[in-house]
Length: 255
Image 1: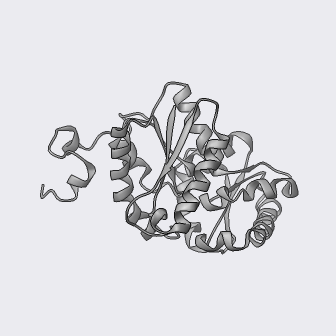
Image 2: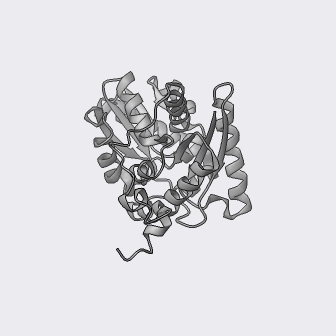
């Protein structure tokens, strides 16, 4: 089984970014099931991090085009590398191989293991969009709250201990004030820094790491022999009819 983690941004543009891609690939491979090969890729252009709806939208065209290429390269499934699941429905329209979004996967898992869950994310700017995202996942009726640590994505790694401390603080508020019994970190960078694992014992409730849950969700889909429904996510008519050969062609057509 060959899985590919698709970062919705040009992470590899710098030496530090290349090193982070390699670190994340190693993390995913370490947690993958026996016989599963995991690799990682990014997109050539787009926002360096996603902390707003606008940045999400900017990332989608390149991410969808790269997903189209990855299917042609023979990958078995795609892990969409942003907790906001930008363009998840669009990717599923374009490819037949399963595409799993971390936001959707963790919301569904949290709704299975508890009665009320809260998401601890990066900045106040994504609280509203994330609440809206959770309402459309299928487990949204169990959402207790979305809270933010207010540390920019690109600054999280600079002081991991400080990020852990404020995550515990916001997690405790979610449990005591919002009556959450399950927590999720709503940021892939927080997941790859293993912040949930560092906080779970202190908080005493399941704390879902989106990187791990997303990986296992995709493994389960492929192991069960299923992908997303093409009745739900229909191939765009111009591509299905042959008028456009790829998602990029749709940007340049006049009709």
